[in-house]
Amino acid sequence: QMDIRQAMLLLTPAERICIQLAVIEGLSVRRVAQIIQMNENTVKTHIKRGKEKLKTYLINNGYDR
Image (cartoon, helix red, strand yellow):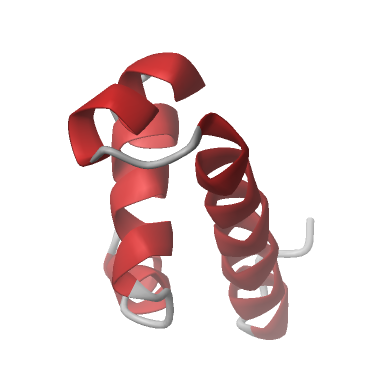
């Protein structure tokens, strides 16, 4: 859990909120876009970039199995 929290700190605020709402809370991209008043495609981009950063961080810290 500490590694996930540390990894989340590497994200931009927009990436963090999109990941939090869509991935962790399970909201749809459409709902996330409504909540944070952002275009759906922009939300998708933030989620994709955020996931890539999280993946890289976790792989670099031994979670590649």
